[in-house]
Length: 605
View 1 (spheres, rainbow, N blue to C red):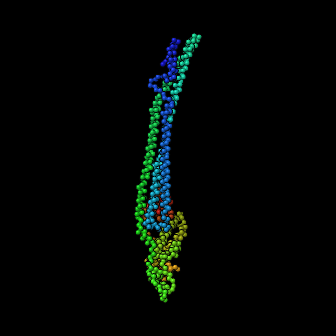
View 2 (view 1 turned 90 degrees about the vertical axis):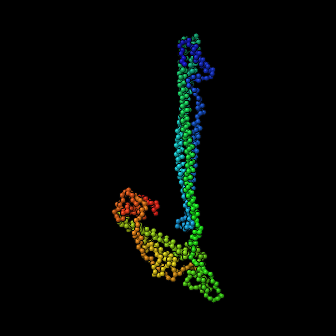
View 3 (view 1 turned 135 degrees about the horizontal axis):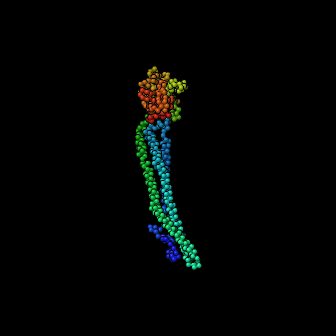
Protein backbone atom coordinates (compact mmCIF):
# COMPACT_ATOMS: atom_id res chain seq x y z
CA UNK A 1 0.00 0.00 0.00
CA UNK A 2 1.45 3.35 -1.03
CA UNK A 3 0.25 6.54 0.60
CA UNK A 4 0.25 9.59 -1.68
CA UNK A 5 -0.71 13.06 -0.35
CA UNK A 6 -0.73 15.52 -3.25
CA UNK A 7 -3.01 18.19 -1.93
CA UNK A 8 -4.96 19.27 1.04
CA UNK A 9 -8.04 17.80 -0.58
CA UNK A 10 -6.69 14.33 -0.13
CA UNK A 11 -6.58 14.64 3.63
CA UNK A 12 -9.94 12.97 4.12
CA UNK A 13 -8.76 9.90 2.25
CA UNK A 14 -5.57 9.84 4.24
CA UNK A 15 -7.41 10.39 7.42
CA UNK A 16 -9.92 7.72 6.57
CA UNK A 17 -7.12 5.27 5.63
CA UNK A 18 -4.40 5.25 8.33
CA UNK A 19 -6.42 6.77 11.08
CA UNK A 20 -9.28 4.37 10.62
CA UNK A 21 -7.00 1.39 10.53
CA UNK A 22 -5.03 2.55 13.57
CA UNK A 23 -8.17 3.24 15.52
CA UNK A 24 -9.53 -0.18 14.61
CA UNK A 25 -6.32 -1.78 15.74
CA UNK A 26 -6.43 0.16 18.98
CA UNK A 27 -10.02 -0.84 19.62
CA UNK A 28 -9.16 -4.52 19.14
CA UNK A 29 -5.97 -4.17 21.28
CA UNK A 30 -3.88 -5.61 18.43
CA UNK A 31 -0.64 -4.07 17.27
CA UNK A 32 -0.46 -2.76 13.69
CA UNK A 33 2.25 -5.34 12.88
CA UNK A 34 -0.20 -8.18 13.50
CA UNK A 35 -2.57 -6.64 10.99
CA UNK A 36 -0.08 -7.27 8.17
CA UNK A 37 -1.33 -9.95 5.83
CA UNK A 38 1.30 -11.66 3.61
CA UNK A 39 0.84 -14.57 1.22
CA UNK A 40 2.17 -17.77 2.88
CA UNK A 41 3.10 -16.02 6.11
CA UNK A 42 2.52 -17.88 9.40
CA UNK A 43 2.23 -16.48 12.84
CA UNK A 44 5.63 -16.55 14.58
CA UNK A 45 5.83 -18.66 17.76
CA UNK A 46 6.83 -17.01 21.00
CA UNK A 47 10.20 -17.63 22.66
CA UNK A 48 8.65 -19.54 25.54
CA UNK A 49 7.17 -21.92 22.98
CA UNK A 50 10.64 -22.56 21.59
CA UNK A 51 11.92 -23.33 25.05
CA UNK A 52 9.05 -25.70 25.66
CA UNK A 53 9.92 -27.75 22.59
CA UNK A 54 13.61 -27.87 23.35
CA UNK A 55 14.61 -31.31 24.67
CA UNK A 56 18.36 -30.89 24.54
CA UNK A 57 18.66 -30.65 28.30
CA UNK A 58 16.80 -33.93 28.82
CA UNK A 59 18.80 -35.69 26.12
CA UNK A 60 22.02 -34.35 27.56
CA UNK A 61 21.17 -35.76 30.99
CA UNK A 62 20.12 -39.12 29.52
CA UNK A 63 23.25 -39.59 27.40
CA UNK A 64 25.43 -38.64 30.36
CA UNK A 65 23.61 -41.25 32.41
CA UNK A 66 24.35 -43.81 29.66
CA UNK A 67 28.07 -43.00 29.82
CA UNK A 68 27.96 -43.33 33.61
CA UNK A 69 26.40 -46.79 33.25
CA UNK A 70 29.15 -47.80 30.83
CA UNK A 71 31.88 -46.56 33.17
CA UNK A 72 30.22 -48.38 36.06
CA UNK A 73 30.30 -51.62 34.06
CA UNK A 74 33.99 -51.05 33.22
CA UNK A 75 34.71 -50.63 36.93
CA UNK A 76 32.79 -53.83 37.67
CA UNK A 77 34.82 -55.84 35.13
CA UNK A 78 38.06 -54.33 36.41
CA UNK A 79 37.28 -55.39 39.96
CA UNK A 80 36.38 -58.87 38.67
CA UNK A 81 39.81 -59.15 36.99
CA UNK A 82 41.50 -58.10 40.24
CA UNK A 83 39.56 -60.79 42.11
CA UNK A 84 40.59 -63.40 39.52
CA UNK A 85 44.25 -62.40 39.82
CA UNK A 86 44.10 -62.46 43.59
CA UNK A 87 42.39 -65.86 43.54
CA UNK A 88 44.98 -67.25 41.10
CA UNK A 89 47.81 -65.92 43.26
CA UNK A 90 46.34 -67.49 46.38
CA UNK A 91 45.89 -70.82 44.59
CA UNK A 92 49.51 -70.77 43.41
CA UNK A 93 50.75 -69.93 46.89
CA UNK A 94 48.63 -72.71 48.33
CA UNK A 95 50.02 -75.21 45.82
CA UNK A 96 53.57 -74.03 46.48
CA UNK A 97 53.08 -74.21 50.24
CA UNK A 98 52.26 -77.92 50.18
CA UNK A 99 54.81 -78.92 47.53
CA UNK A 100 57.48 -81.25 48.95
CA UNK A 101 60.80 -79.63 49.65
CA UNK A 102 63.69 -80.90 47.57
CA UNK A 103 66.24 -83.16 49.24
CA UNK A 104 64.06 -83.55 52.29
CA UNK A 105 62.26 -86.36 54.03
CA UNK A 106 58.97 -85.12 52.60
CA UNK A 107 60.19 -85.86 49.08
CA UNK A 108 60.77 -89.50 50.02
CA UNK A 109 57.21 -89.78 51.31
CA UNK A 110 55.82 -88.98 47.84
CA UNK A 111 56.65 -92.44 46.52
CA UNK A 112 53.31 -93.75 47.78
CA UNK A 113 50.33 -93.65 45.43
CA UNK A 114 48.24 -91.57 47.84
CA UNK A 115 50.92 -88.90 48.23
CA UNK A 116 51.63 -88.95 44.48
CA UNK A 117 47.93 -88.33 43.90
CA UNK A 118 48.11 -85.41 46.31
CA UNK A 119 51.15 -84.06 44.43
CA UNK A 120 49.23 -84.37 41.14
CA UNK A 121 46.36 -82.45 42.74
CA UNK A 122 48.77 -79.66 43.72
CA UNK A 123 50.14 -79.48 40.17
CA UNK A 124 46.67 -79.40 38.67
CA UNK A 125 45.64 -76.66 41.09
CA UNK A 126 48.58 -74.67 39.79
CA UNK A 127 47.23 -75.09 36.24
CA UNK A 128 43.76 -74.28 37.54
CA UNK A 129 45.12 -70.99 38.89
CA UNK A 130 46.63 -70.28 35.48
CA UNK A 131 43.18 -70.42 33.90
CA UNK A 132 41.93 -67.76 36.27
CA UNK A 133 44.87 -65.62 35.20
CA UNK A 134 43.77 -66.20 31.58
CA UNK A 135 40.26 -65.01 32.51
CA UNK A 136 41.70 -61.86 34.04
CA UNK A 137 43.94 -61.16 31.04
CA UNK A 138 41.17 -61.71 28.48
CA UNK A 139 38.68 -59.55 30.38
CA UNK A 140 41.25 -56.80 30.66
CA UNK A 141 42.10 -56.82 26.96
CA UNK A 142 38.71 -57.63 25.42
CA UNK A 143 36.40 -55.71 27.76
CA UNK A 144 38.12 -53.20 30.01
CA UNK A 145 40.59 -51.90 27.45
CA UNK A 146 38.11 -51.80 24.56
CA UNK A 147 35.33 -50.14 26.56
CA UNK A 148 37.71 -47.57 28.02
CA UNK A 149 38.73 -46.47 24.52
CA UNK A 150 35.11 -46.53 23.38
CA UNK A 151 34.01 -44.31 26.29
CA UNK A 152 36.57 -41.68 25.26
CA UNK A 153 35.29 -41.77 21.68
CA UNK A 154 31.69 -41.66 22.90
CA UNK A 155 32.35 -38.57 25.00
CA UNK A 156 33.90 -36.78 22.05
CA UNK A 157 31.01 -37.70 19.75
CA UNK A 158 28.43 -36.65 22.34
CA UNK A 159 30.20 -33.34 22.86
CA UNK A 160 30.20 -32.70 19.10
CA UNK A 161 26.48 -33.44 18.69
CA UNK A 162 25.38 -31.25 21.56
CA UNK A 163 27.68 -28.50 20.37
CA UNK A 164 25.91 -28.57 17.00
CA UNK A 165 22.55 -28.56 18.77
CA UNK A 166 23.42 -25.56 20.91
CA UNK A 167 24.78 -23.76 17.88
CA UNK A 168 21.52 -24.34 15.96
CA UNK A 169 19.52 -23.24 18.98
CA UNK A 170 21.54 -20.06 19.34
CA UNK A 171 21.05 -19.32 15.64
CA UNK A 172 17.26 -19.62 15.81
CA UNK A 173 17.20 -17.49 18.95
CA UNK A 174 19.25 -14.82 17.14
CA UNK A 175 16.78 -14.87 14.23
CA UNK A 176 13.92 -14.54 16.72
CA UNK A 177 15.55 -11.52 18.34
CA UNK A 178 16.00 -9.90 14.93
CA UNK A 179 12.32 -10.51 14.16
CA UNK A 180 11.30 -8.99 17.49
CA UNK A 181 13.46 -5.89 16.86
CA UNK A 182 11.97 -5.44 13.38
CA UNK A 183 8.48 -5.86 14.77
CA UNK A 184 9.02 -3.25 17.51
CA UNK A 185 10.52 -0.82 15.00
CA UNK A 186 7.49 -1.23 12.68
CA UNK A 187 5.14 -0.65 15.61
CA UNK A 188 7.04 2.43 16.71
CA UNK A 189 7.03 3.92 13.18
CA UNK A 190 3.27 3.31 12.86
CA UNK A 191 2.64 5.19 16.10
CA UNK A 192 4.88 8.05 14.97
CA UNK A 193 2.99 8.20 11.66
CA UNK A 194 -0.31 8.30 13.57
CA UNK A 195 0.86 11.18 15.76
CA UNK A 196 2.19 13.07 12.72
CA UNK A 197 -1.15 12.57 10.96
CA UNK A 198 -3.07 13.85 13.99
CA UNK A 199 -0.80 16.88 14.26
CA UNK A 200 -1.27 17.62 10.55
CA UNK A 201 -5.06 17.41 10.89
CA UNK A 202 -4.94 19.73 13.88
CA UNK A 203 -2.81 22.28 12.05
CA UNK A 204 -5.05 21.99 8.98
CA UNK A 205 -8.16 22.69 11.04
CA UNK A 206 -6.67 25.76 12.76
CA UNK A 207 -7.41 28.89 10.69
CA UNK A 208 -4.80 30.87 12.57
CA UNK A 209 -1.95 28.66 11.35
CA UNK A 210 -0.12 29.84 8.32
CA UNK A 211 -0.05 27.90 5.15
CA UNK A 212 3.68 27.30 5.55
CA UNK A 213 3.18 25.61 8.92
CA UNK A 214 0.42 23.46 7.49
CA UNK A 215 2.62 22.46 4.60
CA UNK A 216 5.44 21.60 6.99
CA UNK A 217 3.13 19.42 9.09
CA UNK A 218 1.86 17.73 5.92
CA UNK A 219 5.42 16.88 4.83
CA UNK A 220 6.26 15.56 8.29
CA UNK A 221 3.19 13.31 8.24
CA UNK A 222 4.09 12.08 4.78
CA UNK A 223 7.67 11.32 5.94
CA UNK A 224 6.43 9.36 8.92
CA UNK A 225 4.06 7.39 6.74
CA UNK A 226 6.93 6.54 4.40
CA UNK A 227 9.05 5.35 7.34
CA UNK A 228 6.15 3.18 8.47
CA UNK A 229 5.95 1.64 5.03
CA UNK A 230 9.69 0.91 5.03
CA UNK A 231 9.48 -0.67 8.49
CA UNK A 232 6.58 -2.74 7.27
CA UNK A 233 8.57 -4.01 4.33
CA UNK A 234 11.58 -4.79 6.56
CA UNK A 235 9.41 -6.59 9.11
CA UNK A 236 7.78 -8.60 6.36
CA UNK A 237 11.15 -9.64 4.97
CA UNK A 238 12.50 -10.52 8.43
CA UNK A 239 9.37 -12.53 9.20
CA UNK A 240 9.70 -14.54 6.02
CA UNK A 241 13.36 -15.19 6.74
CA UNK A 242 12.61 -16.28 10.31
CA UNK A 243 9.85 -18.62 9.19
CA UNK A 244 12.21 -20.20 6.70
CA UNK A 245 14.96 -20.56 9.31
CA UNK A 246 12.50 -21.93 11.84
CA UNK A 247 11.22 -24.51 9.39
CA UNK A 248 14.77 -25.50 8.55
CA UNK A 249 15.59 -25.67 12.27
CA UNK A 250 12.71 -27.89 13.34
CA UNK A 251 12.42 -30.04 10.22
CA UNK A 252 16.04 -30.47 9.18
CA UNK A 253 18.78 -29.44 11.61
CA UNK A 254 17.28 -30.57 14.92
CA UNK A 255 15.96 -33.92 13.53
CA UNK A 256 19.41 -34.67 12.08
CA UNK A 257 21.09 -33.91 15.39
CA UNK A 258 18.53 -35.96 17.29
CA UNK A 259 19.02 -38.82 14.83
CA UNK A 260 22.78 -38.78 15.37
CA UNK A 261 22.31 -38.73 19.15
CA UNK A 262 19.89 -41.63 18.87
CA UNK A 263 22.32 -43.67 16.77
CA UNK A 264 25.10 -42.87 19.23
CA UNK A 265 22.96 -44.01 22.16
CA UNK A 266 21.91 -47.20 20.36
CA UNK A 267 25.54 -48.04 19.60
CA UNK A 268 26.35 -47.60 23.28
CA UNK A 269 23.53 -49.97 24.25
CA UNK A 270 24.66 -52.56 21.67
CA UNK A 271 28.27 -52.24 22.81
CA UNK A 272 27.51 -52.86 26.47
CA UNK A 273 25.38 -55.88 25.48
CA UNK A 274 28.25 -57.31 23.42
CA UNK A 275 30.62 -56.74 26.34
CA UNK A 276 28.33 -58.68 28.64
CA UNK A 277 28.29 -61.50 26.11
CA UNK A 278 32.11 -61.43 25.95
CA UNK A 279 32.15 -61.49 29.76
CA UNK A 280 30.39 -64.86 29.65
CA UNK A 281 32.42 -66.19 26.69
CA UNK A 282 35.73 -65.53 28.47
CA UNK A 283 34.59 -67.79 31.31
CA UNK A 284 33.18 -70.37 28.93
CA UNK A 285 36.45 -70.67 26.98
CA UNK A 286 38.42 -71.88 29.99
CA UNK A 287 35.78 -74.35 31.17
CA UNK A 288 37.18 -77.22 29.02
CA UNK A 289 40.69 -76.71 30.41
CA UNK A 290 39.41 -76.43 33.96
CA UNK A 291 37.44 -79.63 33.29
CA UNK A 292 40.65 -81.34 32.20
CA UNK A 293 42.35 -80.24 35.42
CA UNK A 294 39.51 -81.71 37.44
CA UNK A 295 39.62 -84.89 35.33
CA UNK A 296 43.33 -85.25 36.07
CA UNK A 297 42.65 -84.83 39.78
CA UNK A 298 39.99 -87.53 39.56
CA UNK A 299 42.36 -89.76 37.60
CA UNK A 300 45.07 -89.26 40.23
CA UNK A 301 42.58 -90.11 42.98
CA UNK A 302 41.58 -93.28 41.17
CA UNK A 303 45.24 -94.32 40.89
CA UNK A 304 45.55 -94.61 44.65
CA UNK A 305 46.37 -98.26 45.40
CA UNK A 306 46.19 -99.23 49.04
CA UNK A 307 47.71 -102.65 48.41
CA UNK A 308 50.71 -101.14 46.67
CA UNK A 309 51.24 -98.58 49.44
CA UNK A 310 51.08 -101.29 52.07
CA UNK A 311 53.62 -103.37 50.19
CA UNK A 312 55.95 -100.37 49.93
CA UNK A 313 55.73 -99.89 53.69
CA UNK A 314 56.61 -103.55 54.17
CA UNK A 315 59.58 -103.28 51.82
CA UNK A 316 60.77 -100.09 53.52
CA UNK A 317 60.68 -101.35 57.07
CA UNK A 318 61.28 -105.11 56.85
CA UNK A 319 64.28 -106.04 58.99
CA UNK A 320 65.39 -109.32 57.39
CA UNK A 321 65.46 -111.09 60.77
CA UNK A 322 64.11 -114.56 61.19
CA UNK A 323 61.42 -114.84 63.86
CA UNK A 324 62.96 -116.03 67.15
CA UNK A 325 62.34 -119.56 68.32
CA UNK A 326 60.79 -120.68 71.57
CA UNK A 327 62.61 -119.77 74.73
CA UNK A 328 63.71 -122.91 76.53
CA UNK A 329 63.05 -123.53 80.15
CA UNK A 330 66.03 -122.90 82.38
CA UNK A 331 66.06 -125.05 85.44
CA UNK A 332 68.01 -123.27 88.15
CA UNK A 333 67.58 -126.20 90.54
CA UNK A 334 70.05 -128.24 88.55
CA UNK A 335 73.71 -127.16 88.39
CA UNK A 336 73.88 -127.65 84.67
CA UNK A 337 74.94 -125.54 81.71
CA UNK A 338 72.06 -123.74 80.01
CA UNK A 339 71.97 -123.06 76.34
CA UNK A 340 70.04 -120.61 74.30
CA UNK A 341 67.84 -121.64 71.42
CA UNK A 342 69.78 -121.65 68.20
CA UNK A 343 66.88 -120.02 66.46
CA UNK A 344 66.46 -117.17 68.90
CA UNK A 345 67.16 -113.68 67.74
CA UNK A 346 69.62 -112.97 70.50
CA UNK A 347 71.93 -115.72 69.25
CA UNK A 348 71.25 -115.53 65.52
CA UNK A 349 74.20 -113.22 64.99
CA UNK A 350 76.43 -114.46 67.74
CA UNK A 351 77.96 -117.49 66.01
CA UNK A 352 81.36 -118.28 67.37
CA UNK A 353 80.76 -116.60 70.73
CA UNK A 354 81.05 -118.42 74.00
CA UNK A 355 77.80 -119.53 75.47
CA UNK A 356 76.68 -117.72 78.60
CA UNK A 357 77.76 -119.21 81.83
CA UNK A 358 75.41 -120.45 84.46
CA UNK A 359 73.94 -117.72 86.59
CA UNK A 360 74.90 -114.89 84.25
CA UNK A 361 72.37 -112.49 82.81
CA UNK A 362 71.60 -112.98 79.16
CA UNK A 363 72.46 -110.04 77.00
CA UNK A 364 70.29 -111.21 74.15
CA UNK A 365 67.31 -108.95 73.56
CA UNK A 366 64.84 -108.55 70.74
CA UNK A 367 66.43 -105.84 68.58
CA UNK A 368 63.25 -104.33 67.05
CA UNK A 369 62.03 -103.22 70.47
CA UNK A 370 65.17 -101.58 71.84
CA UNK A 371 64.36 -98.00 72.83
CA UNK A 372 67.96 -96.85 72.72
CA UNK A 373 68.35 -97.72 69.06
CA UNK A 374 65.10 -96.01 68.24
CA UNK A 375 66.33 -92.85 69.92
CA UNK A 376 69.66 -92.98 68.11
CA UNK A 377 67.89 -93.37 64.77
CA UNK A 378 65.58 -90.50 65.56
CA UNK A 379 68.47 -88.20 66.43
CA UNK A 380 70.55 -89.30 63.43
CA UNK A 381 73.41 -90.48 65.67
CA UNK A 382 73.87 -93.85 63.94
CA UNK A 383 77.27 -95.16 62.79
CA UNK A 384 78.64 -94.37 59.37
CA UNK A 385 78.11 -97.91 58.05
CA UNK A 386 74.46 -97.96 59.23
CA UNK A 387 75.20 -101.04 61.33
CA UNK A 388 72.47 -100.01 63.74
CA UNK A 389 69.88 -100.79 61.05
CA UNK A 390 68.38 -104.15 60.13
CA UNK A 391 70.10 -105.89 57.19
CA UNK A 392 67.55 -104.96 54.52
CA UNK A 393 67.31 -101.33 55.54
CA UNK A 394 71.06 -101.14 55.92
CA UNK A 395 71.53 -102.45 52.38
CA UNK A 396 69.19 -99.76 51.01
CA UNK A 397 70.94 -96.99 52.92
CA UNK A 398 74.36 -98.14 51.73
CA UNK A 399 73.17 -98.38 48.12
CA UNK A 400 71.68 -94.89 48.35
CA UNK A 401 74.97 -93.55 49.75
CA UNK A 402 76.96 -95.17 46.94
CA UNK A 403 74.67 -93.62 44.33
CA UNK A 404 75.05 -90.18 45.89
CA UNK A 405 78.82 -90.45 45.94
CA UNK A 406 78.86 -91.57 42.30
CA UNK A 407 76.85 -88.47 41.35
CA UNK A 408 79.29 -86.26 43.24
CA UNK A 409 82.21 -87.90 41.45
CA UNK A 410 80.56 -87.29 38.08
CA UNK A 411 80.13 -83.59 38.91
CA UNK A 412 83.80 -83.30 39.87
CA UNK A 413 84.82 -85.08 36.66
CA UNK A 414 82.75 -82.69 34.56
CA UNK A 415 84.43 -79.74 36.22
CA UNK A 416 87.85 -81.28 35.70
CA UNK A 417 87.14 -81.89 31.99
CA UNK A 418 85.95 -78.32 31.55
CA UNK A 419 89.05 -76.89 33.26
CA UNK A 420 91.32 -79.20 31.27
CA UNK A 421 89.73 -77.98 28.06
CA UNK A 422 90.13 -74.38 29.18
CA UNK A 423 93.78 -74.98 30.02
CA UNK A 424 94.39 -76.43 26.54
CA UNK A 425 92.81 -73.38 24.97
CA UNK A 426 94.95 -71.06 27.11
CA UNK A 427 98.06 -72.99 26.12
CA UNK A 428 97.22 -72.64 22.43
CA UNK A 429 96.06 -69.03 22.83
CA UNK A 430 98.08 -67.34 25.60
CA UNK A 431 96.37 -64.02 24.92
CA UNK A 432 93.09 -65.46 26.21
CA UNK A 433 94.40 -66.36 29.67
CA UNK A 434 97.12 -67.87 31.83
CA UNK A 435 97.17 -71.66 31.69
CA UNK A 436 98.85 -71.88 35.08
CA UNK A 437 95.89 -70.15 36.75
CA UNK A 438 93.79 -73.33 36.56
CA UNK A 439 96.43 -75.74 37.88
CA UNK A 440 95.52 -75.11 41.52
CA UNK A 441 91.86 -75.80 40.87
CA UNK A 442 92.69 -78.95 38.89
CA UNK A 443 94.76 -80.22 41.81
CA UNK A 444 91.87 -79.60 44.19
CA UNK A 445 89.49 -81.47 41.91
CA UNK A 446 91.89 -84.40 41.68
CA UNK A 447 92.07 -84.60 45.47
CA UNK A 448 88.28 -84.41 45.78
CA UNK A 449 87.81 -87.14 43.18
CA UNK A 450 90.31 -89.36 44.97
CA UNK A 451 88.57 -88.86 48.32
CA UNK A 452 85.17 -89.59 46.82
CA UNK A 453 86.43 -92.74 45.13
CA UNK A 454 87.85 -93.99 48.41
CA UNK A 455 84.49 -93.29 50.03
CA UNK A 456 82.73 -95.23 47.27
CA UNK A 457 85.05 -98.19 47.74
CA UNK A 458 84.48 -98.14 51.49
CA UNK A 459 80.68 -98.10 51.21
CA UNK A 460 80.73 -100.70 48.43
CA UNK A 461 82.71 -102.97 50.74
CA UNK A 462 80.07 -102.62 53.45
CA UNK A 463 77.37 -103.16 50.86
CA UNK A 464 79.04 -106.34 49.59
CA UNK A 465 79.29 -107.53 53.17
CA UNK A 466 75.57 -107.02 53.75
CA UNK A 467 74.62 -108.68 50.49
CA UNK A 468 76.76 -111.71 51.36
CA UNK A 469 78.99 -111.21 48.33
CA UNK A 470 82.19 -110.28 50.15
CA UNK A 471 85.01 -112.25 48.44
CA UNK A 472 87.69 -114.13 50.34
CA UNK A 473 91.12 -112.64 50.91
CA UNK A 474 93.13 -112.40 47.72
CA UNK A 475 90.19 -113.14 45.42
CA UNK A 476 88.94 -110.77 42.76
CA UNK A 477 85.94 -108.94 44.18
CA UNK A 478 82.69 -109.39 42.37
CA UNK A 479 81.39 -105.89 43.14
CA UNK A 480 83.59 -103.01 42.06
CA UNK A 481 83.25 -99.47 40.90
CA UNK A 482 83.93 -99.84 37.20
CA UNK A 483 82.49 -96.47 36.30
CA UNK A 484 85.49 -94.47 37.41
CA UNK A 485 89.26 -94.76 37.02
CA UNK A 486 90.91 -94.79 40.46
CA UNK A 487 94.00 -92.66 40.77
CA UNK A 488 95.67 -95.17 43.16
CA UNK A 489 94.45 -98.69 43.98
CA UNK A 490 93.41 -98.78 47.59
CA UNK A 491 92.38 -101.52 49.92
CA UNK A 492 89.19 -101.15 51.87
CA UNK A 493 88.94 -102.83 55.20
CA UNK A 494 85.56 -104.26 55.91
CA UNK A 495 84.09 -103.15 59.15
CA UNK A 496 84.00 -106.63 60.54
CA UNK A 497 84.39 -105.61 64.11
CA UNK A 498 82.35 -106.42 67.11
CA UNK A 499 79.44 -103.94 67.06
CA UNK A 500 77.51 -105.33 69.95
CA UNK A 501 76.07 -102.53 72.05
CA UNK A 502 75.91 -102.75 75.84
CA UNK A 503 72.20 -103.38 75.75
CA UNK A 504 72.50 -106.31 73.32
CA UNK A 505 71.56 -104.54 70.09
CA UNK A 506 72.31 -105.94 66.64
CA UNK A 507 75.99 -106.88 66.30
CA UNK A 508 78.24 -108.34 63.64
CA UNK A 509 81.66 -109.91 63.97
CA UNK A 510 84.34 -110.62 61.43
CA UNK A 511 87.38 -112.56 62.54
CA UNK A 512 89.53 -111.19 59.82
CA UNK A 513 89.82 -108.16 57.57
CA UNK A 514 89.20 -108.42 53.87
CA UNK A 515 90.74 -106.13 51.34
CA UNK A 516 88.66 -104.73 48.49
CA UNK A 517 90.87 -104.11 45.54
CA UNK A 518 89.31 -102.23 42.63
CA UNK A 519 91.28 -102.61 39.42
CA UNK A 520 91.99 -99.49 37.43
CA UNK A 521 90.12 -99.01 34.21
CA UNK A 522 90.92 -96.62 31.44
CA UNK A 523 88.50 -93.72 31.77
CA UNK A 524 89.05 -92.64 28.20
CA UNK A 525 87.75 -95.97 26.92
CA UNK A 526 84.25 -94.67 27.44
CA UNK A 527 84.79 -92.20 24.61
CA UNK A 528 86.11 -94.66 22.05
CA UNK A 529 84.01 -94.91 18.93
CA UNK A 530 81.60 -92.30 20.23
CA UNK A 531 78.85 -91.19 17.91
CA UNK A 532 78.69 -87.60 16.60
CA UNK A 533 77.18 -85.24 19.16
CA UNK A 534 73.55 -84.37 18.44
CA UNK A 535 72.51 -80.81 17.64
CA UNK A 536 71.10 -79.05 20.71
CA UNK A 537 70.36 -75.68 19.12
CA UNK A 538 71.54 -73.00 16.72
CA UNK A 539 73.67 -69.88 17.05
CA UNK A 540 74.37 -66.67 15.17
CA UNK A 541 77.85 -65.21 14.92
CA UNK A 542 77.90 -61.69 16.36
CA UNK A 543 81.49 -61.03 15.26
CA UNK A 544 84.01 -62.53 12.88
CA UNK A 545 86.36 -65.05 14.53
CA UNK A 546 89.51 -66.45 12.89
CA UNK A 547 90.01 -69.95 14.28
CA UNK A 548 93.75 -70.32 13.72
CA UNK A 549 94.44 -72.74 16.57
CA UNK A 550 93.76 -76.44 16.70
CA UNK A 551 90.23 -77.29 17.82
CA UNK A 552 88.76 -73.91 16.86
CA UNK A 553 86.67 -73.01 13.82
CA UNK A 554 86.45 -69.76 11.88
CA UNK A 555 83.09 -68.01 11.61
CA UNK A 556 81.85 -64.90 9.78
CA UNK A 557 79.64 -62.23 11.29
CA UNK A 558 75.95 -63.06 10.87
CA UNK A 559 76.61 -66.72 9.97
CA UNK A 560 74.13 -69.30 11.35
CA UNK A 561 75.58 -72.56 12.71
CA UNK A 562 74.54 -75.55 14.81
CA UNK A 563 75.37 -75.91 18.51
CA UNK A 564 76.48 -79.39 19.59
CA UNK A 565 77.94 -78.56 23.03
CA UNK A 566 77.10 -75.58 25.20
CA UNK A 567 79.48 -73.56 27.32
CA UNK A 568 80.42 -75.47 30.47
CA UNK A 569 82.01 -72.51 32.21
CA UNK A 570 85.24 -72.36 30.21
CA UNK A 571 84.05 -69.59 27.87
CA UNK A 572 83.91 -71.80 24.72
CA UNK A 573 80.97 -73.23 22.79
CA UNK A 574 81.27 -76.17 20.41
CA UNK A 575 79.53 -75.65 17.06
CA UNK A 576 79.17 -77.43 13.73
CA UNK A 577 78.92 -75.99 10.23
CA UNK A 578 78.42 -79.30 8.43
CA UNK A 579 79.27 -82.96 8.94
CA UNK A 580 83.00 -82.36 8.43
CA UNK A 581 83.50 -78.92 10.01
CA UNK A 582 83.10 -78.40 13.74
CA UNK A 583 85.07 -76.79 16.52
CA UNK A 584 85.08 -74.28 19.37
CA UNK A 585 84.35 -70.54 19.27
CA UNK A 586 84.30 -68.02 22.14
CA UNK A 587 80.85 -67.93 23.71
CA UNK A 588 80.89 -64.13 23.69
CA UNK A 589 81.23 -64.15 19.87
CA UNK A 590 77.90 -65.93 19.25
CA UNK A 591 74.27 -65.65 20.27
CA UNK A 592 73.04 -69.14 21.17
CA UNK A 593 69.45 -70.37 20.78
CA UNK A 594 69.25 -73.73 22.53
CA UNK A 595 66.39 -76.14 22.07
CA UNK A 596 63.99 -75.82 25.02
CA UNK A 597 63.88 -79.60 25.28
CA UNK A 598 67.66 -79.83 25.59
CA UNK A 599 68.91 -80.53 29.09
CA UNK A 600 70.19 -77.43 30.84
CA UNK A 601 69.20 -75.24 27.89
CA UNK A 602 70.03 -71.56 28.37
CA UNK A 603 70.77 -68.60 26.11
CA UNK A 604 74.13 -66.81 26.04
CA UNK A 605 74.31 -63.35 24.58
